[in-house]
Length: 134
Image 1 (cartoon, rainbow, N blue to C red):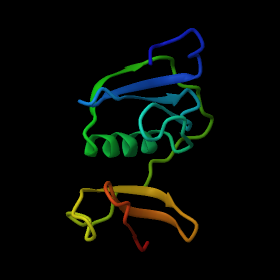
Image 2 (cartoon, rainbow, N blue to C red):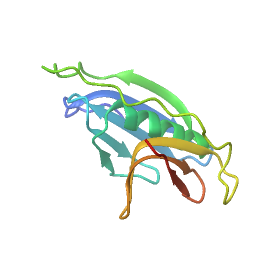
Image 3 (cartoon, rainbow, N blue to C red):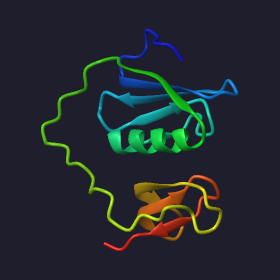
Image 4 (tube, rainbow, N blue to C red):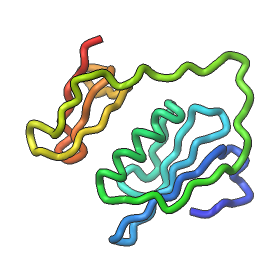
C-alpha cells in the first residue's frame, strides 16, 4: 500500500489500520469520481461517487475499528469543464442506533440493492437499511 510508479491516476490516498493488523488503502482517482479500495472487506471494490464515497467508506471503517493512519495528496486532480455539485446533506431524523442490532448507523446518499436505490441510513453491523423519502 505504498506509492508506486504507476499511480499517475491517483489523486489522494487514505491509509487505515486495525489493531488486528489489517490495513486498508482508499484511493480517489484524478478523475474526481473513481474510488478504489485495496485491503479489508471491500478489497478490489470500485465506486464512482468521488469524495462522498470516500467519506462513506471512512465512516464505515472507523465504525468497524479501523483508524486513519495517514492521508496524502498523490497527484493533482484532472480539470473539469463543468462544476461538480455536492450531494444533498444528510436529512434530519437519523436513528441513533440500528433498530435490529443496536449498532451505529451511517448515511449513504446513493445506496442501492435489487429493490430500491436512493438515500438511506445503514447499519454498520447487520446491514439494515431505512430508505429516506425525498
